[in-house]
Length: 151
Length: 410
Image (cartoon, rainbow over all chains, first blue to last red; front, side, top):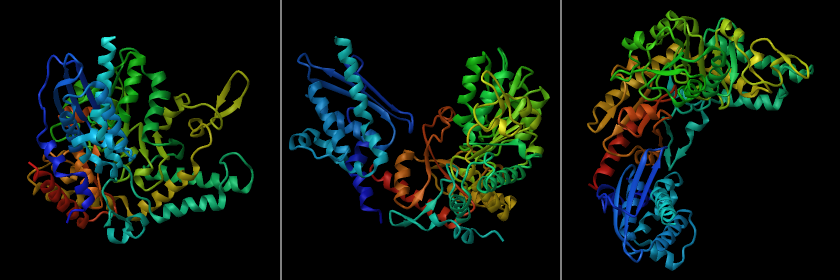
């Protein structure tokens, strides 16, 4: 039978998000546009965020192709973003990165991760951590660019 | 009698397990494992005669020099170089190609000249020429590949022209596995007065390669893919070409006389080996060549053709699996690059790793050709002398398991 730690990586939820990505739409007039590409494996993600007048994320769009971890991570993230401000998004990104590094999270951080916590098993597979982080580094760049434009 | 099961006993690493399963090492096109004989040679060097070569008059230096030069002779004989001076020790295939792109191209490629490579080149035989083309105002041209992943010889006369100064192609593709029709390509190159270079990284470790028969001016290969340590490789060059080339790196050992304002160059091959060479690993390469010669390169090739044929047949039974490259195992090396349904190669690689199976996944340093085929990444199983049909069976069974595992979520 299959080793358990493999199932720990490829949880049903993860495979489901890989097969059926959430928020799989392209938002044309987005405030934040994020593009992530890993030339090593060709994994690619595109995120678009539309913001409310008060700066909270109102709508999320996601397109991508690549391995199950990179795509599921992006799809799971889209489900956590709605209603968050960009600052809260940044805190979420930090929490996720710390989870991938195997660091101890505060209860608050764990809570902020929501559905993304299913990806905790990825940290047992060091070569795949980059896959999970792809969408987060794309988002970081996208937010930086957005703030640069606003300034 | 060629017996991979007996050969396996010479490779200590093959006895280890990965995730509790016996290691099935099918990533030989990336690097090969090392037999005890090569490992022992390294130990002996450090324990018995380690010292700098070509310098001291003491016993250790003389012994080290003698072994280093013996290794050069072995490498020369292995590829049928008429003279040991045609063998320049470098770090690897990449460095060998960069040596030519620097030392040769500087004086021999001009504005409007052409350098010809193929569509399926490894980055190491593409990126150095991009720089030469940009610096010299030369054109970098591509020989197309057929649908079977072989360099298309029908394009030779149009792509290679009297303006072509160098044709440099991969002998055996690390992606399609094709053994390219290099003699025809070389004939066309020489017909227009161009030099002809071969990237032998995937051919020299796996089949008899004869530089005189192939009539190439340069041949590059790496030791680590043929049972030697990483960090040692060979640039073979025709002596008449080498003699006219300026040095690559400048410094110690490559000089004859030095003044404050100028210097004269040492004889071949030292002129191209500036600084203390990697003599230890060169000697280990010599031991690897001894090992391969004892097996016989014809027998090595035969084994890999048979293993490749066995794998191709098994893969053909899997509906979701598509294999790149020629259909005929005799036209290809013992490597199989494939896609498995819509499983991303890295997911597949992780899955197989948990079954103890090591394959390569990704673009194999051949990004443009993958892009051309509409692929981002592929899986690749590549064989060597110690691989068996049983291991191919394990791979195929695990592939089936992976297809089932990743399918059940849909």
